[in-house]
Image 1 (cartoon, protein in one colour):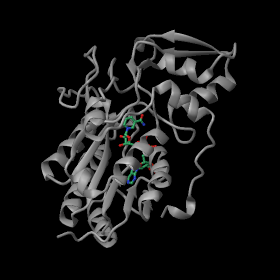
Image 2 (tube, helix red, strand yellow; image 1 turned 45 degrees about the vertical axis):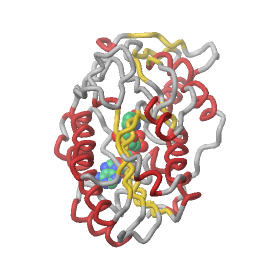
Image 3 (cartoon, helix red, strand yellow; image 1 turned 180 degrees about the vertical axis):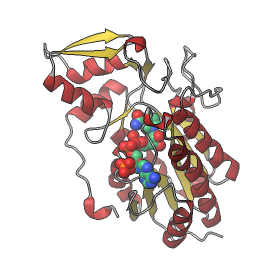
Image 4 (cartoon, protein in one colour; image 1 turned 90 degrees about the horizontal axis):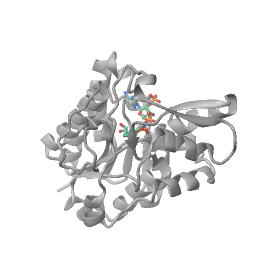
Length: 298
Ligand SMILES: NC(=O)c1ccc[n+]([C@@H]2O[C@H](COP(=O)([O-])OP(=O)(O)OC[C@H]3O[C@@H](n4cnc5c(N)ncnc54)[C@H](OP(=O)(O)O)[C@@H]3O)[C@@H](O)[C@H]2O)c1
């Protein structure tokens, strides 16, 4: 028996992924899109109250504490949102018979690998954010709810705080950009992630319930931040994009030198593959920005 009434609850709905999810998921049911003011994920009691009130068939958790450097000094808040809240959401999903979809990160790894990380590779986060995200994955697994956890990396879109937006702004201001060229990963466009999520939801709950678990959700190929910046800036002669080392760009949080995620499991189990990252970037740069559906976010 399920207590779920139906519909899709999206948390963190004003985030860069959240807003794309709200748009993409509308094809698959009525979406209740909640931002931090309507559902503070740091407040476990509020999660229980709101989820029980809405009783959705799907909970899509796009909310997260994503300030990687700030997390080094705001551990408690990062833990509440990234580690504790996913477990509470999973508990409520289980109670309702709903399916939870959650997102995690390549930053659960230390980057010492040189081939793409499979889902069962040994995590070893280098920073507090990575620790909190790994704890969130584990909290969901411990509850035993019907859940999909999608690990992804280097998320960008035309809106929000992300590398693409920063590089475009700096490119308009400067003649020269210095960008780290010794960290490899995969850029992932929010819309491609949202489309893949919607495709999964579109398969229906029984189909997804049989395939619950942890999946890498990432575009094909790999890049350094320097490659990514060059591709964003394009062929224009200015600004010059200068490759630098991580040591030349110190940050409070350490980042893995390598974070490419192997995507075979998603292809085998769901028959889904995201495009090459360069193709997704091209589509992003030539697409209209997703308008914020302000009336759909509470
Ligand atoms: N960004 C990346 O490069 C990246 C890489 C790998 C994985 N991921 C994962 O992908 C998912 C989506 O991330 P994103 O890039 O879309 O991040 P984002 O743009 O920072 O969005 C996260 C959203 O969560 C909200 N949030 C933060 N604290 C909250 C709280 N206490 N209660 C409710 N909402 C809260 C934020 O609201 P405010 O704006 O009000 O803070 C924001 O709208 C996350 O799970 C993230 O860990 C991201």
